[in-house]
Length: 480
Image (cartoon, rainbow, N blue to C red):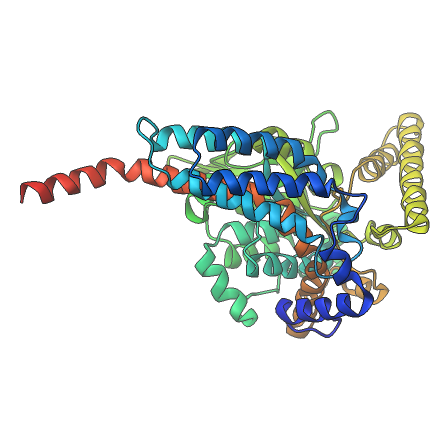
């Protein structure tokens, strides 16, 4: 499995592993303490019977009832700890029947029930289940690993429409959201088309003069070669993906912001990404720019912004409030986080639980220590440094379960601020894909209903928009 070249090859080997280990028998059996399997089987039979009998309103009510009844049973991470290839077959069987029922009800022609009503109902039920989002952390060069995560999700049609990124993750998120599916497919097919020459150190004299290490204009020029000249609103129109970029305020009394087509529709994506990458002492703070009526001008003039990872590496709360996100796929590559999380991999048993507990206690203690230090340290650089350390340590750096983790390899740390060779870039992509493959079964199941409702919202919306056009076309044919 470690040497698999594709997900299909990895999954075939995972299924073979499950057969040898006995996990395949576990998947086929309904015997488990993690699910009310007999009730789920009964629900599947009830829905299938009603659908095959041609029920309409009773099936609609029963479907909503059973979705609400069972929605909390399929979220346990432990369901995916026993087998490599997936979880209990009863989970797939339930989702298969739900999907068949939704398809049947959407396609059904009933007097007085038009597409507008169907769309309203799908939106209502879909809101209960929320939406998925992909959150990409910072990580300097280690963040190239996100590229492999994105590719693995895209290849399996599991890439969420909403993507958030901070620091290096913002480059990856913006790159993804500024391209259509067809454009991404072309770039993934030939990785040599993707430039990676983003970084350049300043001469020592300039470092001392500017009090920064890296050449920021060089980074901006690089962003101009990989990101189209778009605002956040234009990005949504182009790719239909929702880009979110985390930025942190330079002023200590300000709060972190999440830039997107709702909060900052006219802001330029390139400068937002430049700000999100502005690690203190590595790059200067950035003035955000916007294009208003064709004229580029400062956005929130006199406000400067720095690295999004400082205060909002993974903006769970903001995404929930703005977009009803409740399924988080997190990809973590921050150099200061990866070593600690490497020993807390999600898994069954007492030892992993103890490791997670110790890690949480350690991070909480560090945050409390820095909080005391920032409040009592003398004014000036020392207090500012403690404030930054507190902001960094007092964050949640993982999702609850759909978390994809960069493997901890000390050799990777020697080049965190250097441009990779093409071979090194390929290695990062492969690391990201390999780390994502074991999570795909969980991601597929956990986001299946959200993706189903999103698909039908799109279909119904398109049918409603095209309704008058179809009507006019039929009328013209009738006259002819």
